[in-house]
Image (cartoon, rainbow, N blue to C red; front, side, top):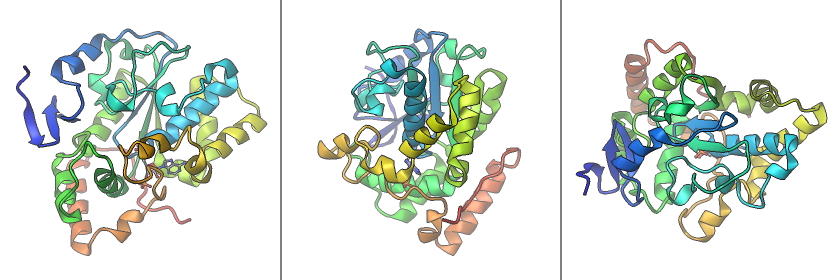
Length: 292
Ligand code: A3P
């Protein structure tokens, strides 16, 4: 039996990342993923939780389905694009047509060896951490495998300490950026998708080598708007709400700047101070708000 480094009654820490205790995944399974067999056509979607993972799953599924119509199975995009770490959120070992797409919240350096040395394409979506914190706070109240926070203030502190699902946002995003030395990685900022989804889809298609007509790109964009995904059972994880794994809809607000409705002035000042300390050498700029 593994000895577990407990972060809380719901999370254990391994390699500085936090995992759900109620899932079956343990240290040996995480290590075994390093040898996960990779195909050259595989695509990996990497995110820190609550950064727009499902949104990008929907976009990738629509792009690949447009290039290769028989790729689309009659399943949710959660099943079609399974979580590498497995668990209730998907089975990576299920046979699926090429190109296989996996999603993962692992730090980039924990990914299978075959993903490294720029052998397959990696899409990394990141979002401003204040909105990630808020989204994750609501998610922790919704997802039955996570501890319901005592209060927003408690959760705020846990997030800054990296004691939440996914570990430290600061480490994840820094490692993501550094990973361009060994991954063939395309960065997408959540807020840029809010500002101009079409442009982001065009750039993503160029990275993936997907040659789509303007009309097809328009369709991908249309299928991936918040409004459409909210009612699309393939993309909105409704089945998890129906089975009571999620108590709230995962398509919550889908905006940039909701943290302003949650942070006190003091919390915001504290966040900015920690952000400055931890991200001083980070070259990318966060977008803290997008006006609707
Ligand atoms: P909010 O909780 O702030 O609304 P993840 O998929 O990584 O768990 O991220 C979930 C967040 O992405 C949620 O944020 C969700 O609403 C948002 N999201 C999902 N699809 C979206 C879309 N089409 N447009 C904008 N935001 C979207």
